[in-house]
Structures are given as C-alpha cells and as structure tokens.
Image (cartoon, rainbow, N blue to C red; front, side, top):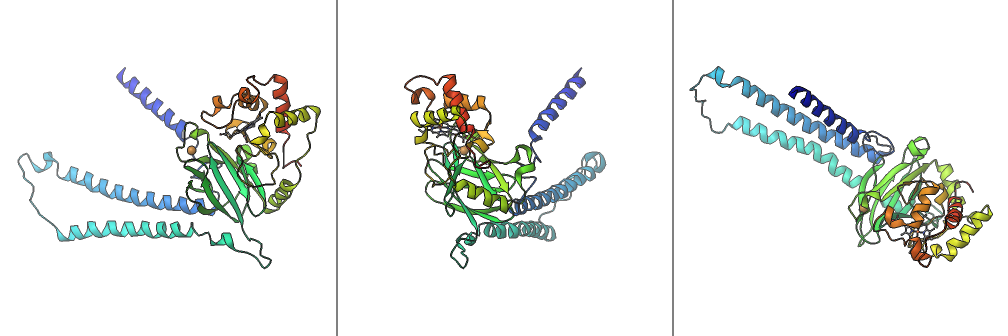
Length: 362
Ligand code: HEC
Ligand SMILES: [Cu+2]
C-alpha cells in the first residue's frame, strides 16, 4: 500500500513537471532555442555558467562521499579520534585560487557581452545621403499593451512588432505609466522600460516567423506592472528584408476602404461611438495613442494581445474589456454607448470593419 502511494506521488510529481517543462524548447518562445545572435550569445553564457557550477558540484560531492566512506566509524573504529590538523597551506592555496580562476572564466565573457550587447552607436549611422543605415523602433509599454513606432519611416503600430531578419534592429524603450520590461525570449534577454529614461539595445532576428507555431515569435512584459501584467503579451512577425520593405510601403498607403455595407456601418459606429478617439486606423503616424493603433488589426494574431483572434473574442472584448484584462484603460461598451451594451448587429458591424483592417493584404 505504502509503496503504491509513493509511486503514485512520484508519478504525479513527474507529470506536473512535464506540464511545466512542456513549453521549454518551443522555438517561438524559449530562451533555450535562440533564434538570433543576441540570444545565442546569452545562451552560451548560460551553458558556460551551468558547466562551471556542475563541475564544482561534482568535485565537492565526490570529495564528500569519499570522506564519508573512508572515515566511517565501522572502518576506523569506535573510539578513534582523527588526527587534529590546523591549516594546510597547500589546500588553502588550492581552494582560494581555483574559485578565483573559475570566476574569472565566467566574468570575462559576461562583462564583455554586457558591453558589446549594449553597443548602439549603429543607431545614429547615416549613409552618404544622410539616411539612417539601420532600422530603429521606439517601443512604448503602456498598461497593458505595446506601441511600436518606426520614427524614420513615419509608421506606427501596436501589439504586433514587424521587423526584418538578418540585420541589427535598434530599440529605444520607454514606458508611459509604470515600469514594464520588453522581452522576446527566443531573440534576446529582456530590458526594462522606464518612465524616466530611455533604454537602448539591439536585437537581431535570424529566422522568418512564418513557419513557427502561430507564425510569430512571442513577446512578454517581464516586470510585474499591475493586475493584468501576465496578459501583457505581444507578438513579433519577422520578414525577409524584401517583404519588410513591401510591408512598410503598404503601411504608408491610405487604409483600405471597408469592403461591404456591414463594414461601412462598422466604420461609422467606430467613429460615432468615439473608438476613433483612442484607436487610430492608419499606420502612417507617430506614437502617443491612448489605445492601440488598429491599422493592422486584421493581420494580428491575437485580440488585446492574448485572446484568440476570432469574432467571438473581439465582440466579448468590446462589450466588456475589464472582464478580460482587469485594470486596462479601455472603457466598456456601456460607458461609450450611453449606458447600453452594443446590440449584436452593432457588434457584427464593428467586427466586420475591424477584421478588415489590414496592411498585409492591401
Ligand atoms: C479611452 C480610450 C479608448 C476608447 C474610447 C476605446 N478603446 Fe479600445 N482600447 C483602449 C485601450 C487602452 C486598449 C488596450 C487594452 C489593453 O490591451 O490593455 C484597447 C484595446 C482595444 C482592442 C484590442 C486591440 C488589439 O490590438 O488587440 C480593440 C479591438 C478595441 N480596443 C476596440 C475598441 C472599440 C470597437 C471601441 C469603440 C466602441 C474602443 N475600442 C474604444 C482604449 C480605448
Ligand atoms: Cu508587466
């Protein structure tokens, strides 16, 4: 009976562990599957420090076990008092020097990487015509969503970052309200976004996101920022340089006109209910929206950063955003609509309109 119980316990523990580890190694979200040089360098550092720690543990455990076996009472006798020694110069030197060497082996690449990965002078480089040579994205973290501005291109998006592969992309990171932290696990370690200063770094995306699960890399807020912190996700689409240029050109064109009567009704309601006051619908523009820019809403992978991108979730969200992201700053339908929820027809019209907003399919 007892044995059976123990086995069962062990089994359920392993099952729980498997559940937690199930996400490890999924390349759209794991630090263990780096998909760019920044993440690779950081991963190698992780391996190096793990190797050093493992070596230390093994050496210590081996000496410990040897001592246990060699000096056990049944071997040395009941009343033996071991030889009393005090200080051993050779040993003292060894166990002082060895850790110092190990720490140096760890410190040199760590410090070196800390500086090289913070190297952002490329951000200001210009070519002969005075154009920036590298892409810079201004990221603003807001309760509980992400704004992405391309200052040199005059483009603004939200929730889904679009970047080219195979080149350094520079980031200016800040927060609009409280501290957040910008993190794309497979691409590189996180950096805080603060209200009082701008943090800068670069990332490089080596893989096109198209073949991935969901077709995107996952990004996260990595700094506890409020009740909906855990839902403050964003997604990253990585495109070849060519596709990225096509995307930026399309982003600067006029938004596509609504394609059906229902969508036209949706657009009218979007304006009349005041949605437009917080949600810009053109990707040509600058940062500072009160709500996410929705010019790419139809292309997005999620509603509000984390809900499956379908009509039902969109309508539930519009009706009552607080139920899905407590503490977020979007008013409920009733607040916008003179105390009444939207009717199903109104929700259908808004859905038709919003789902039709696209840059990819212009
Ligand atoms: C006072 C400003 C404000 C108004 C007015 C407003 N919203 Fe929002 N909306 C927000 C904010 C802020 C968010 C981001 C919430 C979050 O994710 O934390 C948001 C998120 C959204 C999203 C999800 C966006 C995405 O990229 O996933 C949709 C869709 C949306 N709003 C639709 C509407 C519609 C439709 C209306 C009008 C009926 C409306 N909003 C009115 C502020 C506003
Ligand atoms: Cu957060």
